[in-house]
Image (cartoon, rainbow, N blue to C red; front, side):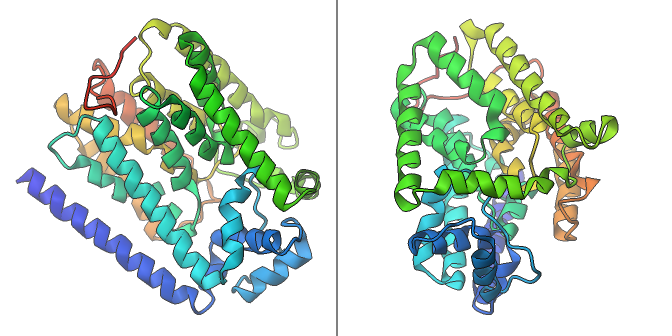
Amino acid sequence: MRGKLLRILAVLCLLGIAVWVLDASAKGMSGAAGGRDFIAYWAAGQQLVHGASPYDGPAILKLEATAGLTGNRPAFMLNLPIAFFLAWPLGFVSSSLGMILWTLAIVASLMVSVRMLWILLGRPEGRLHLLAYLFAPVLACLMAGQLGTFMLLGVVAFLYFHETRPWLAGAALLLCAIKPHLFLAFGVVIVAWALWQRAYQVLAGISVALAASFGFSVLVDRQSWSQYSAMMRSTEKVLQEFIPTWSVMLRVLIDRNAVWLQFMPMIAGAIWGLWFFWSRRNRWNWMEHGLLLLIVSEMCSAYAWFTDEVVLLPAILAALYRAEENGRSLWVFAILTGAALAEVMTQVQIITPFYLWTVPAWLGWYLYATRNSGPKTVSASEGAPSRVG
């Protein structure tokens, strides 16, 4: 009965996403694309395709105004130029068509990620993994047109292929480099693990992918990196604005003007991550230890939004299945995600402190669900058990 109810809920969720995509598509035809974060990527793509700077404020604002953006401040693509490969294709389509394709790409990357996670978790008979479509950051990411599910795909692909296709696993991490500040502790430990395990192919994969992406950014805009640097200097006030992270709260409590304080938790998190890995290096398992590391990386980030929490989905789903196996109540997660969904559905602005509780809540849920239990995962290769140290 429980499995049947979960299947019905999953179908309803998928139908809801389909309805949302169609609704977004219809609204996009009337200029609603300007009300989503997607517009920054589309405008950057338009500029790149036409040989112009993606950081030209007046030109960006003019483009975005045609797509429905209101106000007198352009929405810049703040990602490093290595992310141009995502924005560039949008330069060949209108804002309305671009939003449709972008939304479909977000949904596709989410569905592929959930499928791979289900396999990594051992293809369990239950359908708890379909609750991924109800994870509040997922819906927030879809509503905003943010690229969080692309980063999620990068994380999941690394977890899925790091044993069987290390080159591909390393290359997939390029998607995480779109917002590297979210993955500092996670990334530092990947390097340490690869060196310890002599998994040099993983390092080679990410190195080649980064080099190719850097080359592409220079190819489409030779001045991209200097333009990016100038844009960031001109928008330094972004770091002065309130962002609902605990790193920002630390700065606000000690000295609002000392921006460097905002980066101290990231450094501390990376140091802790190295200790955490080293103390477990001979029994390290990415689907056990790595998922906790992923949450800590997010919580220590100097700059993050609620939509970025979609990358925590591997930890959330693993914790759901562990809780079920250990006989622990799923109501804890239901209450947490219900509260987060209520904020999203009532359109509570993500720039408010009302989202400060979410990452600590996901961390608490993960620790509660997985305490005193080992990993239950399989390798991506023929269902063989994964190595555990």
